Image (cartoon, rainbow, N blue to C red):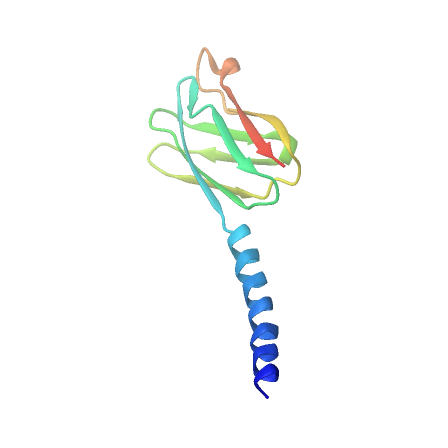
Length: 118
């Protein structure tokens, strides 16, 4: 009788622990980025493959764009508003992100690196 109760407890606890671990691994990572002439701060973002990401971007000076071509995600960034770019990186590596809205002389050098760990 006692063995059956222990067995039931284990059978209920194991799936619950698995689901809790799965939910924790899928928690969204939030990264704040400021787009200023002609830099992103920070210019390197590190995230985990398979984990949802929310990049919260502000641009205090002029309109900007934020584009990660390798993941086919982009957003416009308007001064005095926060833009949120959500995606889940599906592969590891280093990927370039750029400003894709002309923001003045120096715009062509405005880029950063997204590092996705496997």
